[in-house]
Image (tube, rainbow, N blue to C red; front, side):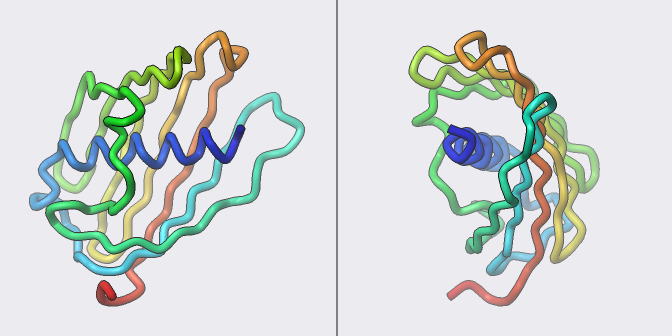
Length: 140
């Protein structure tokens, strides 16, 4: 279940990026290595970090599946300089989730966090996903 939740968080991250004005960010397109570490307070252990590689462009800075299929809605989006902050609500098969996050771009790197509040069906848990990305070359 944690792996599925991590995938959903990455998809939510994609959706907010697609909505944002990515061309205004200090961002270099290319192949990126992205590491996501999920932390869940109250859990005996956290899942190991997951690392993926993805081609990121100015039009689509994260090339993953759209969060639209997860019935997600961005409710607030603010871009200040190289930092994008957002709030989002999702309804995944009747399970409601709310998230807020912040990403900061710095040329060939980015970092950020996503806080996700899971609904009553998941025990009202809160999950924090820490994202780090670095450019590793041109897109293949």
